[in-house]
View 1: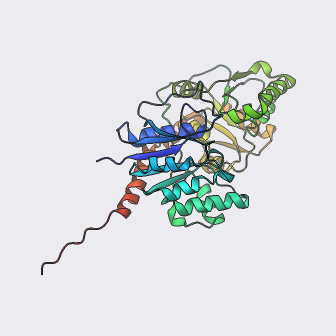
View 2 (view 1 turned 180 degrees about the horizontal axis):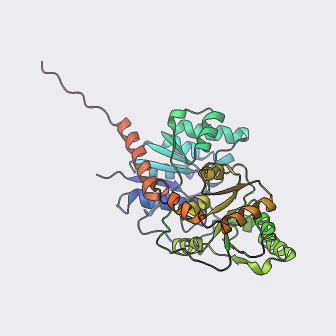
Length: 381
């Protein structure tokens, strides 16, 4: 009998990177086989309208945990216990309670092997954040970080059992079926949910130093940002672009892209620009998709970029330094051999979702084997 998996996370049509990640992992891990299912975390304010459709290979939702309902973890745990293995996505903001601590009684109630995937590992957590994460690791059978940086940060800065920690990279879709587009004018691209900290203002200032490129900023405003602040950030960026004299070279695509549309957009870019302000980000789905698609990247020195770009699939620049960003972009659009080099690197199998899913399968198999009683042969009298 094939192994069945229960997945706990946000899930499409909710619009967030965690939901997209979970759907991709679940679809590739189960391959459309029946028996697995998703326990969906649902915030009452989640933006579902116009979100991503669920891939036909991805498991169906078997239970919804409304995170505004006290004690919802009990029914969620009961639902996950119907499967052979539970895979739990962790981010501080998706679970109820102080720093999401309602995930803790759920983990303790699980009777099946449990893999927790950590999307954030902070360098300087609050005492509460540190305590929650340490207790999560203690309750889980295995913990996955998506970069070695996150693993080192976790095992070096928190009181956890390092033997539980495995590094499995964030998966990347295959965009190679979409041909690369060629342009007379260089095309720069940033995509993802929009909000303060994205650093788009620094990319706009870099664009002002470059006379030719056009720049696409694709993605809806983050639902939480929109709820509390409206579109103030997007409007401020448009005002800045006008002030810098680059408004006519900036395209704003206020959409949440499905996989086909995203592939076309990525493959149309000459350079993907990741001007993020964060110095904590240990996982970036946008970064992994860009590298996987063979598109050159200019990124600020956030941890995942430092780790992934070290071998040459792009250029790192200091945070909030538009002159350095402009120089890096100029170098990449003028270097004729960059794309060929990147295409070869991106063709490696380890970043692709099938390979990533296989590593989760192997980890689950080890956990199940560890729980299987060893048969003892009887000795004749």
